[in-house]
Length: 312
Image (cartoon, rainbow, N blue to C red; front, side, top):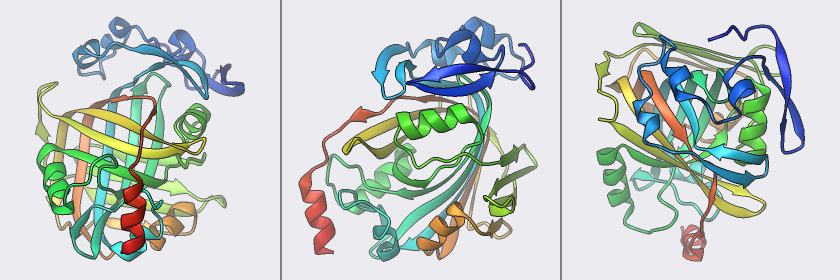
């Protein structure tokens, strides 16, 4: 594929102009990427997963686009922590309920992502998120927890989601309704170590992570598909965003002791502190995966979720 390191060209997203790499995937294909072209990139495991997911053209707040957004190679690191339900509820909209491990304790996560090859070109991202119960049904919380752990299927509400490119910011903020902003983010994940650093507005450290990568297990393409449903409000209406990850190589560690998480000064650090995390209970590092990220879909959220929130 051609080099896209220096030259950029303008692209329009719903009336907003962003600069994208000249000759990159977005410049050439505008979300309708030639899979045969991607398959020739030696960094890509295969494109078989994406051949089963036809794209659809949809109207959105960022103009006419195609969905899903395909990520052909990515890596990620996630720390999952216990946090008091009271602190979590202070950051959740009333319509959503935290997923509790036991009464009074929920789950929050810090995540770092490196998207090496995707339809909107390479970028990095970090997140602070809250695990929530599915918005459209009201099983017992423990049943929701078992279902999530057993099926690798989680629901979340994101409180921080910085990125390092303009197109990722505009698509995520305007198109998906995520709490995004643009800043410098460095992520380096391999079989030995996972590191991530988010810069604050002064160029210092907002949030950073350094940890040894757990032993990796490889999976054939299509064997392990995890799903994440995120909830956002767009124009005062609730939407669900589905992400389907084709996991190719990943590993986990319970109660990691040597994860170096530095909470500095900045928006992410403030968001994490507001959740008052108590203890890190799990580390997940994925050195290779693929992702299909769908555009937001309107959903109805039962009003009784709001009533439940008030009673607690």
